[in-house]
Image 1 (spheres, helix red, strand yellow):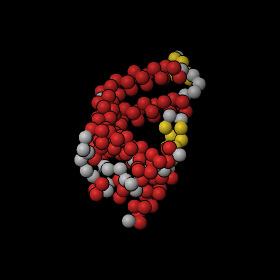
Image 2: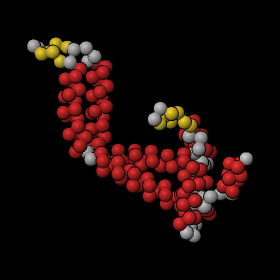
Image 3: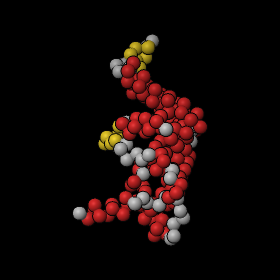
Image 4: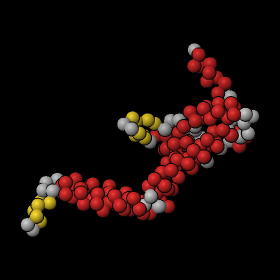
Length: 170
C-alpha cells in the first residue's frame, strides 16, 4: 500500500501541459476512493444520473485524464503502423530541422529544406492514412466516453458534495 501512495504522489507532482496551460494533477483522487464499490448504485432517473455525471466529472477529473492517457497509450501500442508512421513523421521533422537547416549541394542538385519536407509528406501522409488514425481517434473517444460516463453515472457523490453548493453560495 505504501508503494501505491508513492506512485500517486509521483503522478500528482507531474506537470501536464495542455493547450499552453500548465496544470497540476492535484485533482487526482486516491485509487481507493475512485474504485469505492460501496458508493456504486443505479441512478433513480435521468436527472440523478445527469447530476452525478456533472459532479463526478469535476471531482474525478484527474483520474479521468489518466484513464484517457492510458487508453491513448494502449491504442498506440496496439496499432503499430500508426506508431511507426507518427515516429516517421515526427522523427523526419526533427531530423530535417537539425541536420538540414541550410540548402545543400548533392551532385548537381540543390536540396532545400522545402524539398525535404515535400518528400517527407509524400511518404508520410499515405503511411499515416493507411494506419487509420481516425479509427483510432474515434475508438479512443468512444472507449473513454463509455468508461467515464459509466463510472460517473454509477458512482454516488460523497458527503462532500453536499457542502460544495454551500461553498459556492458563500
